[in-house]
Amino acid sequence: MSPALAGQWVPMATAGKAADGVWRSRGYGHILVVRGGARTLYHVAGAFCYRDPTGDTDDDTYRLVSIVSPTHIVFAASADQTRYGFDRIAALPRRCTVQRGWTAHDLGEVIAATFADLYPGFGRRGRTLGTLTAALATPVTSPPDLGFFQRTTRALARLDDAHVGLQATIAGVDHAFEGGEAPTISSARANPALGADPAERERAWSKSYREGIIRLLDGGGHQVANRRILWGTTGRIGYLNIVAMGAFDKDAPPDDMRALDAALDDALTAFQGLPAVIVDVTNNRGGYDAISLHIAGRFASERRLAFSKRAVGAKGAYQRFEVVPSDRVRYLGTVALLTSDVTVSAGETFTLAMRALPNVRQIGGRTRGALSDQLAKPLPNGWTLMLPAEDYRDPAGRSQEGVGIDPARSLPPFAPDHQTMIRRVVQSLSPPR
Figure 1: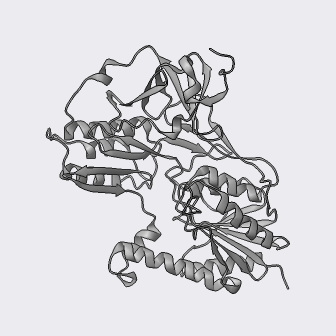
Figure 2: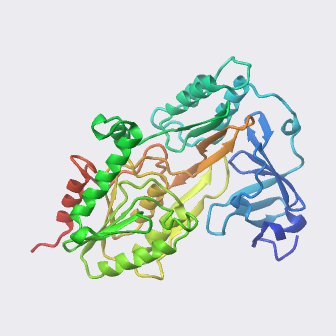
Figure 3: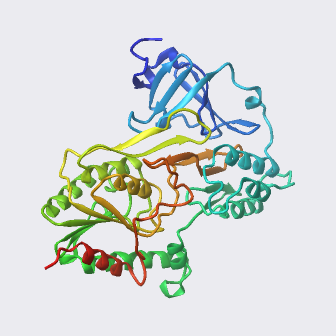
């Protein structure tokens, strides 16, 4: 092995023969065959193994590789993002190359085995592997059809997990299931007073949420960064609302941060000298953990551990993720972080990152409890299963997966409306006259 490769991050294309071989992932259910830089991916679930049906070899996961030793390599999209460890195995298991027709019975067993191997949420909210396995079992030996899709999604829905989903094309028609909707959003989608159908009702709820905030902000505030950021002041208190951790510029990649940084520069410059700032993620639907950490750095005076994570089933150390103080404009005064049951995914890793800072206090409702990255797992018949497959831990070593992050101060985020919550927090933060 070249000394230049040992422990260094290099593009996969330049790794050479050191990366050749058959590799089994630590967690995630993957076997990777590398020959001359070309990759072939297989999926493992219990006794099952099958070649990835998509044939996709452009996954950013494998952009960089670090050859730790002749028997262990690590991949990542970048050195500071999630690392995927693989151990060398002698050969590709024979079962991975056996051709077979996949029946509904087989597919139910593959899905159950995938959850058994990878899912971090059992034991939370009444979820058990036995209940899921029984719900997925079917004696049907014909190919998976719409009826099987519907039965499967009913079983998955019982997990009440925002990162569980299933996509399928059946008889030329696309079908998609997403689990774990927040109770607040479910209630809005069921409210006929908000519109004719669930999607229209949710849009009406979101519109009312945004317009209520605008009415509170001096001069109506500023809607910027592709409407992902809404900021302003209410009296002597700064206010920053972030509705997603990504897509801040419709003409740039979703993880591009230039428009975000420009918006934060303007907002935090305006907040200088104010006694306190509200950072509101009560309607944050997630995005990128790297963006969560990046924003948290705007409120940090020193490096702090935000969270650690490890793939379910993996052994060894957890990967640490830190909040690093930004070299751009920062606000280091008192911060109230507002959360709710709608706050999910990267909104929750942002919550962990902000809670690590001594100047931040979380107020509002418990978050959704879906922190793990969502793993897309192609099934052997061409359908795609989505599920979490990582164990996230806060700096104290606690897991909030399937539970949510409790605030330091409980305050109803939407009862009777969100403006009421903001007014109450502003009042508590405002200095006495």
